[in-house]
Length: 385
Image 1: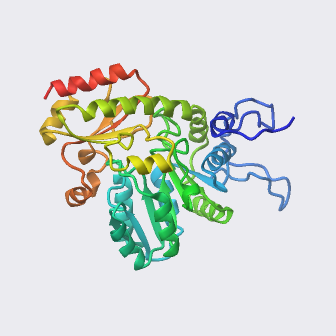
Image 2: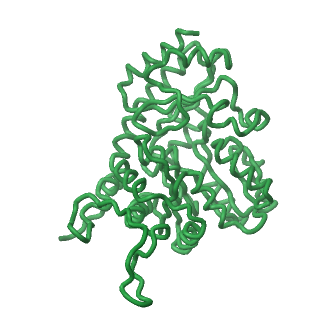
Image 3: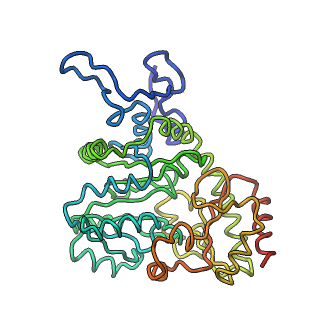
């Protein structure tokens, strides 16, 4: 039997199928054992202890590494565990440059590590080439890229930042949670490491918490695996198996969610009670042209400024029944979030103001429901204003 080259869509569907060494199960079985037998004295097999290695984690790691074009991957217990794992690659007081409008959890972790004295972190508008260049000129050990940013959907030039970062001697790290490898592969654009909250679109069903780190080189992957074992941040076998199950439908889910998102963004853009829409799939968006060149689609996340501020937000969300008020994203269901009081509240008012996260900003994760029902539900919110 000759193996044919596989399209990424086929890779996601076929990952791990039929590889069961015991009974040739089509779907990989769940391995819950915490420990494994040695073949004999000083004869360790491929698996010895569950924290270090596990078949379910390995299958998922191989699948994600293939999709991202990496040499290896580590599966972690959460997205934040993935980011914290990456920070172990830094020297003492390592200099980190991060986006000023990044995910609130990432901002909180980086700020906390900086207060501990473990790192030095500068938050900058990475769409401002001059400001970023000035920081890189001072030296950097790591540059963290988030595109599009969470929650303002700002698009940055990954290849250009990666090139500039390499000149400064920095490790280039990209958070690819929003787009997933179905829409962008940052390693191909010059990054060294990609990380995900697999809780989101990779799993896609809002029933698992997990993370992943994918490295471009085998040496980096090995170092990350060492730290993951040392610190114990590896994910559980069950969560890995569930994530692999969700991963198989990644592309069809992304296609459906993205189609709905484009319809909703266009509708919101024309709505009289909306101040501004943030979605790189609209031609009016500042990141539209760049997004079209470095990714294969705009994604399924939309943010918009609601006229009327906090008071309007409370009235708007009250009657919604399809867009549930929740902090996560990427599932088959539609969710709505108020970043200032939910996902980004830990940033503090001053940092949110600098980032542009206002009192009326709403973020929606567009699901796979029918677009007419989605619009009708949001209209209920607008009618309450």
